[in-house]
Figure (tube, helix red, strand yellow):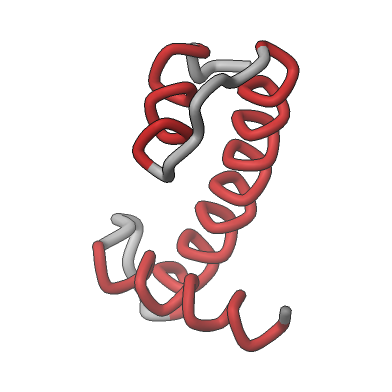
Length: 71
């Protein structure tokens, strides 16, 4: 996992959590990384479809909307 536990714990605390186990923070990190990887793949596909080699913020936004519709 590339994300460290401390920022993940902060996310829990900002959401109102009092105490967060290492396992909970690790699971959150794993899920975030999985979703981010899928989002990056979709954004890359969209930028290529548009004839660009550079992924732009609009590709990320469109990929997120596309993924929301699928779920």
